[in-house]
Image (cartoon, rainbow, N blue to C red; front, side, top):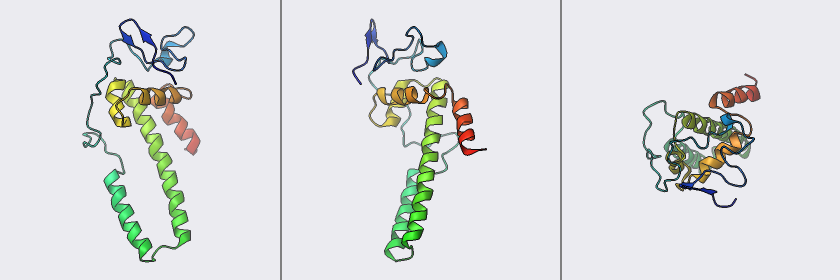
Length: 160
């Protein structure tokens, strides 16, 4: 992808031909940029990604996973887990990773709907650039337009 398009007053959030507000795009699709949001500021702001959340906490944290990995590694070294058990464990972890990725995508959509700017979301993606969350939102919006639609899509895929 090339650099962001530039308009009078600063950069927009458009790459690779996608330009918010471009003729032909429905207004509901344009959630990457909303008037009044400071998307052209270069310094990321927002909560520390390692700080505890005041609302509902995720069911698994990085610290929990590390502790589990250390315990499992000790069990493997002690010969308590056979290859078949590790393969089954791998399958469960891959399913859990998909579930975590889906939860992350839903939370990204919900945060954006609640007014979080790309600048606030950028530190969570690691580099502080608005391109990462913008690109993820663009990809998600090819399938759904809202967090509620994404949740419904997950329900359909799981058969619930």
